Image (cartoon, rainbow, N blue to C red; front, side):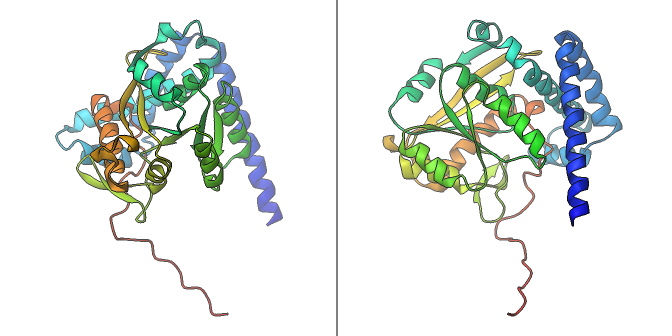
Length: 313
């Protein structure tokens, strides 16, 4: 057991060193060179290495049955290009995005309503998905002076997890671990703070079931519970790439306020379906900017995993 732990630590250090060296290389290169490299490498990842190609194409067939095989291939390659450009943007964000420069790179749709909601003396849930550059969107909230507490799963590599967390918190955002963060979230809600969450993660058979691209998909119940129990408005936000690097539309897709008593906040299922439909609407605008590598429809309603019986005492 001790030898395995030592090998795991060595592997963590090797991976961490490789990532840090890669980030340094990206930061040293002109952004135009990085952009061209992302386009070329995306073809290799999608068509040569074929990383999770079967999962990506199956997801695209499920979501867009009208797509031809060639369209699915192009969308898959576009997804990899978008992910690589995200890495470049994260590496260069501290140098490019400042309080005096963000207007060169962003167009904010629904700015007035967005600011009004965040300045209310009430708890708020800010929701997005694995679409566009959600990391950059959370980064921008801190840059604008809004203190956001984002819930994120810890990476298996503790060195990488610390490195990514430092970037995320470099502009005032605070990261809460996904496991065991319920008391911290409750405290933020009690103090009228803002919680940032991703609303498209598969929650398994015990999640709340909604319709996503015409097929049942589960979402975490905690999102709706946080909102409905604290009477906190839910703001669905997206950051969609327009063209190349650092060229985005930051859009407020919709607001659901339990205090207003609309049908979308009638119960947990209604609220979950509301924000899922808004995320689907955004994905349909730019399918290549969604993370199709996830097994979003990996389980079905009512089919829980079988657990092994415990041995008798």
